[in-house]
Image 1 (cartoon, rainbow, N blue to C red):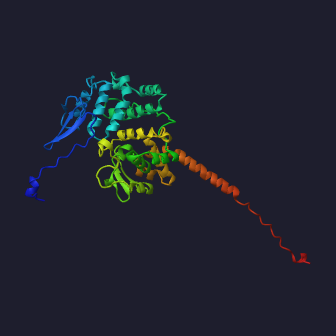
Image 2 (image 1 turned 180 degrees about the vertical axis):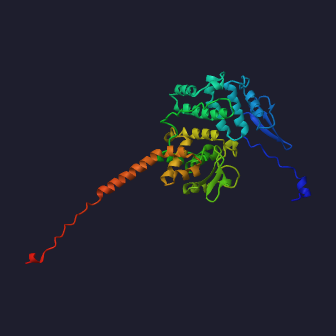
Image 3 (image 1 turned 30 degrees about the vertical axis):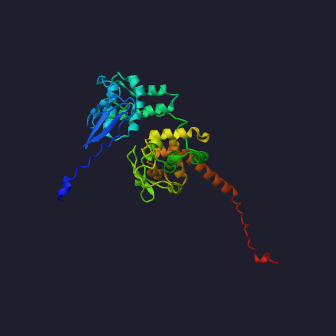
Length: 376
């Protein structure tokens, strides 16, 4: 199609960089061009100096500059474990494929490895070294499993990029944890509905009846509604899911304002209308939760487990639940293992009781045919 004269005269619409920026990094647009700069304490009484960053937020140089300004050591010799770890983190940020929360998780969990092996060559590391760190975290199964998960991702990348010769986590199994995120009880759910207020209560309802991850719950809004459900791509796994709006949630949503664009969960008070991050919403939830005795110890992620169990009890298969909540089949099976065993046990008991109540079979007496000579 030949462009019209007015189409040629219209200014080009600038496309924003689709990337999550870390703390102290800010983006501005001036005359259609995009600029990034680093400044600590922006908006406070004592802001730091504003330092320009490289223009391309998807380049390793962009993130290397941020690391340096944040005080991270990137002067380690190139053949050390610490330098390879830095390269991995920089490439994760530059790719734009993972959320900032996931990358921060990797950064935090890898600090143990950096302290232990930072100045060593990565080629000298073996699974026994990773296992030794795991053994040192025997009293902290959660931290041990986080470390193992990070090392698995790092090892896969490092081997592909020829920094190591073998998988550093081969043969290492996660720690068993008796704690973790527990599902909420009926009493806890009722207490939350009754005593939580404002956007925090709305968020809990959204978590409960959808099973969404926190990173998705803070993004979902009216624009995601499609024929009685929420259709969206998950932030963490980039997986397309379709979550039906259950009758209980539909009833709650009748009082929600559907007119403004943006997510259902928006900040209140001084920052009214601003979007939430997963961490900020969790913090605001914790502030209200800690004032309610019935909710002691509960977590938002526990509601994800609660939602999965509710769907399983409703008769949905593990595959169907995965399509709704965007969770792996292994995780769903882990969440539902007790529920499935309990349901199976009840079914077996019902069958046993039914068999015991079955009336005994009455055997018919064999009829002896009389001979004519026996009849008097």
